[in-house]
Length: 244
Image 1 (cartoon, rainbow, N blue to C red):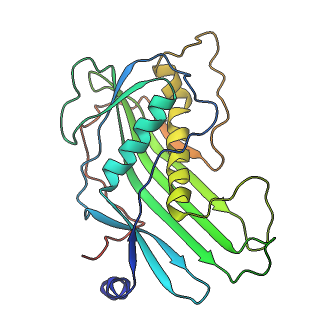
Image 2 (image 1 turned 180 degrees about the vertical axis):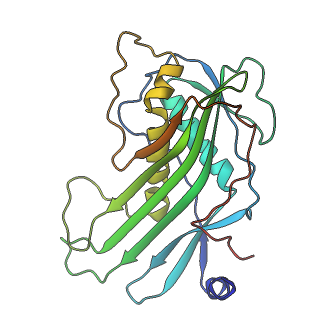
């Protein structure tokens, strides 16, 4: 580990920002209830290495984010607002403000993006390969703290193998690719049947689920016993702290 960090310290580093990228099928699908998003308290370093870019000459650039729980919470709040809810980000470790009906918390378990750039063969061929992955541990609770849904939710974004053609625009920015993966994981959380059963929808006659973002998967435990903590320390097994 020490050797890996020392090697990373000799390579250029670039800070990236993540944002919510809207999926399909969730626009205003919920009644406008108040919901608090509480970032998970995290014992990991404030800076987190999340990605690597390899250029055509095999040079390496490391990508990092600052304050992962806060960044993930902003993506979660964007998804909830997009879905018609009224999201408020509350301080980690604090109590939700008055008037809040529900509380959600998502902690990043895995955030990674790799981009490999090839020497362009022709203007009509793709000259890069992008792979982004995100895995979040998310919980939904009511105002009293009773957990309604808890589980792991994943999203991926893969932009095509070298030379392959695909309809539609490609994502060539690693920050946008990782944003898409995180947004896909959040889509999987919000579109989970137990999430939709817990929160009233605008159309209560049907609970048919819309299509969630491509590459989004979930592994969730419905209605477990116990209370949702205001925040929980969560390790990052798939990423390393960025060197100072």
